[in-house]
Structures are given as C-alpha cells and as structure tokens.
Length: 443
Image (cartoon, rainbow, N blue to C red; front, side, top):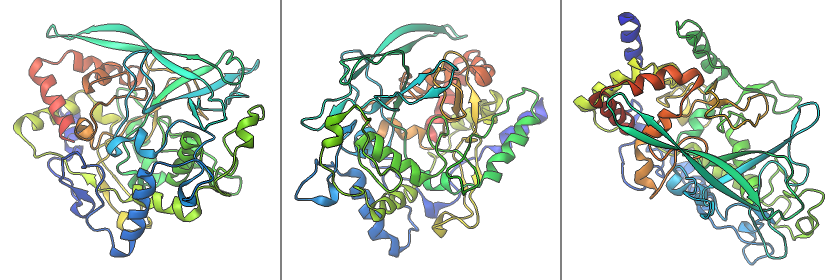
C-alpha cells in the first residue's frame, strides 16, 4: 500500500504549470478570461472577435445590427456570459422563488419500451424566456431537502438535495418528464481538451483496470456522423459531445435560440406555431466565421497556474492521493502532436480529469439517460481553476446542478465509484481536511 501511495503521489504535479506560454499566474476577477501568452499575432483579431461574440447580448431579428441578431424565439439567456460569468461556473437558485439565471433544465420522456426521447413538444431543454409574441415554454423551480453529514471530528455539514418542478406550461401539460438541472460550467482549457486524442484517454482505462479498488471508468463513444469514425465524448457533464465546435453550436441553439450550420432549424417544435412564425436573423444566424471565432476564443484562453505551494498545500496534495481521488481526477494528459492550432499541440495539461464516465451512485443520479450514459453516470469534472471559482463570480455552485455551495459539499455528495474516497474525507482529521481543501483551492 505504501508503494501504491508513493506512485499515486508522484503522478500529481507539484508547483506551477509547466507550459507557461499557455498559462497565466493571474488570480484576479479576470483570471479565466485572458488569452494564452504565446498566442500568435495572426490570431489576435479572431480571438478578439470571438470574445466580443461570447460577451455580446444578442438581439431580436430583424435589427439594425444583423451580425448579432436572431435571439430566440425561445431562449434561456441573452448572452453566453450570462451562464458563464467571468468564464467561470454558474449557480443554482437558493429557493423556489428565485429564478434560474445561470442554470437550465434538460428534459426527456420515456416510451412504453423504456426508450428515452426528447419531449415531443418541449424538446431536450426547457426555454423559460421568449421574444415578444411567442409564449415561453414554462418555468422551472428548485426545491431543497436538507441532508446532514457528520464528519469524524464532529463537524456537521448540511447538504441540500434538490428536486425540480415545472409550472406555467406554454404549450400544454408537460406530462411525465425526466428532468435534470445543469449550471454553466467553467470554460478554461476547452481547446486543450478537444486536442487530447482518444488513445490518450483510453490509457487511463488500462490504469484503472489494474487498481485493487475496482474503479474503472468508461469512454462515452459518440457517432458524430455516419461517414465519420466514432469519437470519445469529452464535453458536457455526461461527456455527451465530442468536439468543442459542436458544443458551442449546441449551446447557441439551445440556450440563445441561434441557428448555425450544425443546427440550421429554429428551436421550435411542430406545435409551437408562434415560434415557427417568428422572423429569422439569417440562414444561419451564426455564420461559419462567427462560430470559428468563438471556437478560437474558447480554445486559447490561458490556463490558470496553481497558487504557490505551501507546506499545507503540499500536505493536502498527499491527502488527495491517500484518498484515491487521483484515480478519477487524472492529474495530467498530453495533447496530440498534430493538434490545431499548433499552440495546443503536444502540451502536458493538468486538468485533473480522466474524461471518463463513472457511476456516482443514487444520491447524484438524475435518472435521465443521455446518449449511452445512464442516469447515474457522470464525466469526471476537471479541477483546474477550481480555486478561482469564487474569485471570478460573486456566487457559484458545484456539481452538475449547483446543489453544492462549497467544494467540501461537492465531495460529500460523491458516491458509487467515489464512495470510498468520500468516506476517506469524512474520516480525515481537521488538519488533514483543511489541507486537502487548501490543495484544491490552489488549483
């Protein structure tokens, strides 16, 4: 066991980020919105265009600014920044009376054979907002049940278990529907994640297969198109999207109601007549050049360097390994040698994720399958930039639905494949737990 512990500890990088030309030591409110220092001059203009489009409040068509019109007809947000403040994470409402600002609700229905489909009227995502003359789809509210956990040193932590309810249906009753809340995730490193090869991800499956704990994640294979080979999903909380470009196009379509070449039809079902009749902002509304600019912007955001290592952070790094968190939160991967742009190629990136699906147990399950991922499976969340979450946004949430208000709360919700690690944290002394949290906050 000592030998295994030392091996695990050796896998965790100490100190700063190795590739300083793609990282930043900025730890201010704008820490997640800076370009990579070595970004070529030839890409600066496109990067700035992408940033403007990302921050832009989109307007209703037709308008005097056709480059940024086409909002809706049904939508959740006016801009990308609304769900990702400071390029960081969103949060869940704290009470049923508080509206969702950086959170959305995914929908599904089940047929008699148990197959899962988008809702026939409301689609895969509830749009709570709409342009004038178009009814919104409805309202979602979050309710909480308190759950108490007592740690080994006697400290009591109150968690909150969420449930979601729907009301004010705009197009007929919702019926029996599967619901899953999602807060906006942090956006750093998305181009680097896109640049990691499938083979590199699969290497960790082999590593996990050799562990005595029996923790083995699985890749979420996705078929993007009939004429293309399948690729491992890596974006989204269930790894349900394989490429950054598609992730961006889907977010524009579902969250802002803006069409693109990947999603050319308005986000309206057959029974949403007013939605179908609304004027368009273009065909498509998000041009190929605009999509490429946003893609480049998100690809070349600088990675935050960890805070300077202290004795407590070093001790916390040891606790991270001792609790076996490293088995799923893989400290580092290397991007492909042929990644584009070249700045992203052959980089060691400390994302602290294996990008694999793991069954996280019933307490975290949303009971809503997504592609080949079950209702209790989730992609291991990257931890880089975790310590800056509360620096770049006033209030944030953790986990897929924002139920956790602190990093410790997020840990205490872990179950299934991570239950042993959760229990190890519960059994830590006060000093050990404080060191672990200090290490996580240093990332």
